[in-house]
Image (cartoon, rainbow over all chains, first blue to last red; front, side):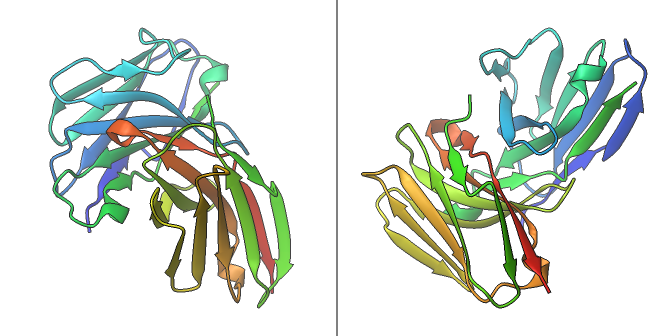
Length: 119
Length: 110
């Protein structure tokens, strides 16, 4: 089946630095990818929809200048947390849609997530 | 904002028992999906039920959908210790956007 690779799986950084998270579709072209954030013991919150070749669509309350999304190719979307602060510490997960997948119940594929800890 | 609510928030059962989790949502959906998440890991897709379906089975999983009540349930039969995880429902709207419920932490005791 389709695979979405997310890297890194965990990262620790100092406050004020920027962190880039990559999400790759390994065997399909993903015109659309999604970025979620999950705080401990909470649900996933959709942050933004990443569209190849165009600007991302951010959910209400998500700062687009803080969470930079780049979807420069059909297989790669990146999320950059700029000037990270401790409150940005969270689990970030991407998902990608395979538009060619016939079986509807598997058309969205998730990465394994990135645990970000900001000191 | 999250549109889904799940209950119970936590469920602890003995191996072999059935586990039932419920989910409610607020807006119209194209389909409703259930996912499993082990602690600190990514999501595993379990089952999808379309808005025009009422019940679906997959192995030990049974999911129902009541669009009039905007609710769904997930039943895991003959539970195993390996079923211990968090379970989330997610309503899919246009553009493949998923809105997740709050989740149920299931613990299956051996």
